[in-house]
Length: 383
Length: 92
Image (cartoon, rainbow over all chains, first blue to last red; front, side, top):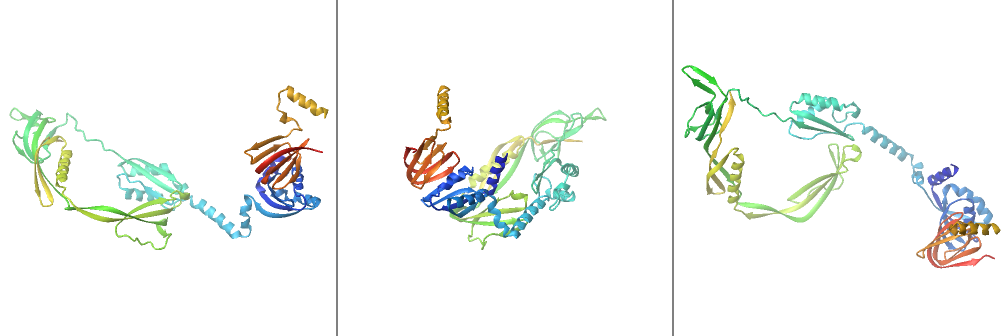
């Protein structure tokens, strides 16, 4: 145990490099090893001079040996982990400042400095307002925030939310949520319902399985017209209601128009880049460089944040990179692409139908297309 | 003397390494620039070109250039530098 304490004392006390002068200075090596003092890095400069490293705490034990061997020493350098902080003895204010800074970081990390709502389709402004009302705001104490209570309050307040999560990371609170998926409206099969036209068109097929046909094949219908009625008459005054069921197909027409620029502009990067750094403290920007003007007319701006997680405080090191480019224009004829694009748009919008024929009118900068389609235009509506 | 002979005989009989004997020193040389000496009795002379270690029955003389005793303890020592020759001398 004593040996352990001695080793610890030597470790904490550091080491000292000394220069030994005199006749046959190597004699001190044997004397030191005889006292179990570890000796390291013995440089033998000459017959009367050597330097060596011994633990600082063993320096007083060296004095009697020096008298015995008629040697003189000169301390060259003192080293050690704690010795690095000895300069603070002469600068107490610095030490106090470091302690105050550490306390300030510890104190400030107990507060919320950033509240972020991850957008996912709901009204984030309303959610932020509710969070503020619930006490989740910049400057609030983290210990005063009850995550379970806030989650429950959010879900109760906003019925469109099905789940809410609150994640605390340092001094930052991130709120995420999931929207409730509305259940599809299902009309029960025994509930009276009629079939209506969802678009204008000419009926080409009408097979009624249940209900009474309100139009005939070849009829022109407008959006909202009743195609199959739920009301079925029998006898003179008798009637009953059914859930209408029919296969409906109609011929429909569409007119789509697209435009394209007569020339296209391309970016050509010149290779010049400029990088600017600044500190974002809260909402304030502190420039770290002189002259923040951008020397380019056309440029891409790429912004990324460094030191984002530093101490959880709202202090970010932001880097902005500017890449210069010039614009090159080329004449372009993209009407074929526009025609293809218009066809794709219509095809994807037809839920249950197909394009029968199309015609293209090219004029000026635009392309006009006429489509003739066959599609199901029926929609069932409960009475 | 007789005791050391008995110890030596016992070590041989038990197939033990002779380096465990109290009066035997072990010398390990690495790449002619690093030397480890175990079980020495002290430094008899030292300079950057000539170092002499006291072993029990003989001395170990190191000749080289820029030699440094990296570490020295009560019974072991590390020497580094450009070793040129190692010689052994009988103690008078």
